[in-house]
Length: 199
Image (cartoon, rainbow, N blue to C red; front, side, top):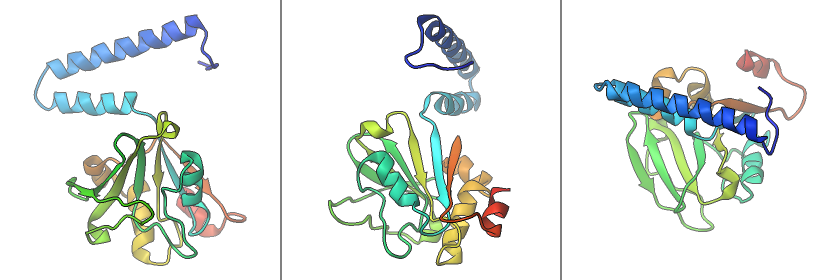
């Protein structure tokens, strides 16, 4: 079905009918009890949450710069060398806050201070991702996921990108960095390792 904006009334009515039918089905599934409640809630979160888009590419390809441009504020750290060393999820939410999510799914608040970078009080190897909530309209219909990227300065940082995007099924079941799509940034013609990563 093609989508035009603003949607015409007939198209809007069809979309609402589909949404209502899906919502009714999820409520029926949850009504069966047991672990089906969790399954219904997880499916509902996937269906009704804004799409999650991962930004990936080589070190210094401009991933965090793109995140900042899309959000309209300098929230993702950028630097002359490597700035992003953990996967970071940017989602609409108030008040502005950050949480550290560990590989086992635990969440811990991270203090934020204007003009300073986020300080992670944990070993990066134990972190699934950092979850940033920002009161901005720019994220009302989109969740962005920034990654350390490929050809990072350390093997561990590149492995965190791979774990979140390729190898992370067990991790994403616990920590939910699943994405609906991705933007792959190239700083020049695609290199062999980038092509292999995409495959």
